[in-house]
Length: 173
Image (cartoon, rainbow, N blue to C red; front, side, top):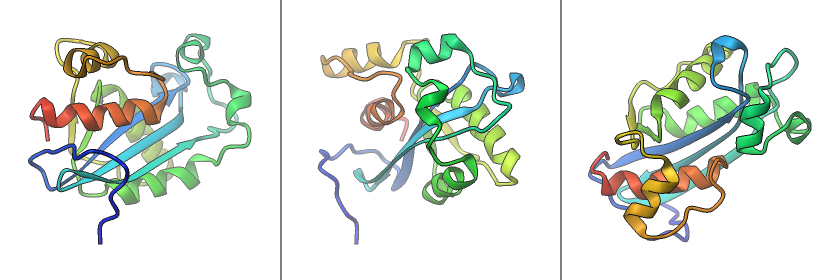
């Protein structure tokens, strides 16, 4: 039985799909940057059935870019007590296994998710879709589609909820 959250029906032509967003310590996993927050919104038959959100303690050796922290508001002290990647990523993958994953600027999130999965010997998701059109920022696209300001941008759960609302309108899912 599906548990419908307090969401309006979001729609979409795919039966099951997931919106995902990450917040990171910088712009590139190749430079030692890591994921410090992840959120997933699972949609089944046009209805949001599950939300998942977690901060992640990337552990020692992570490269923190002050520019990234100033954008997403996440600093080392904010994740000191958070679970590690070995706890969070299996939970995330359990939700999104075998379903299309939708993100805003998907190539950015995809590179980080792939790097985190590879570190843990896990299989990353293969099917990605992107809501970014003509390099329009998520907040601006949300405004264009809904006439409302997107609050808490660069917070993984808020951004993921926005992607879940936007993707069906763009015909992506």
